[in-house]
Image (tube, rainbow, N blue to C red; front, side, top):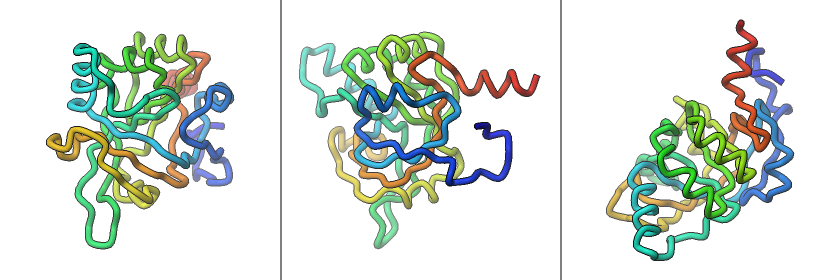
Length: 192
């Protein structure tokens, strides 16, 4: 299925349960439209730096990353009556320097926007991990899919702290699958 056609039919979206099991990751293909439901964790630049610093110091991480998804987001504060403010994706390549190391620990998926570097794509292929893209510019809409938020670590980092989100029907696209396919490259090839 291709995102080049319009309009998008929500019946085309596959449900994906988080945390992500190995067999579920293996079934996903670049270009699949998905709805994520379950638990995921957040982390941007500061969180990634701090996670790697903890590893360098031989200390435990605040969460076990095996099977988990890290969403690259810095949410805004919630309005009254809401669990979170806007929660749109941030640019993923900024985390590329840290991602292979976290994949070594069992991280199964990442979620953000934009392309990943070749070393990250190779590390994902080696570890059977996937990369999802969220729809940029839709942070307020995406926040409606977040049902609960808990602070996990690095409170002093503000919106760049690590949070646990409970999500339901969070829309995304599989960009890089476990076979090493890249949906962005496939779209570019279709355009000629």
